[in-house]
Length: 153
Image (cartoon, rainbow, N blue to C red; front, side, top):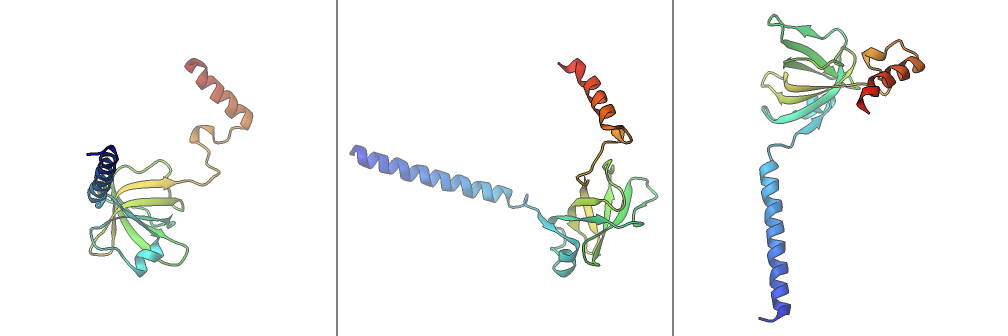
């Protein structure tokens, strides 16, 4: 076989291997993809029951309730329009999770229309200040940051 033909065979084999690897990756990740829904989209065109999705919106003020077991919470996620989706979550709430704040819930839609969240991601606005620095001036916050990094150098 000539060198020209050998290179052609190697290129074809490399392309076949690359396409095969891509198809295997797509097949392996097909159940890992989760779509993002707003409350309006979930009301108009809900996902299949049990399909892994993400729901994003605002926690409705006055909707946060802790159940009798002390771990399960229920709340309502609202969007820009008047649509709302009830959410149930069992676990430890993120520190930034409060009524009126943004949230992204990862989970599945139950048959009764309740979104059962496996994970909650609390969102904060661009003016976020850690609890430790609330009420401090910029100078005091800079001094505190300097004190905490002195031993790290």
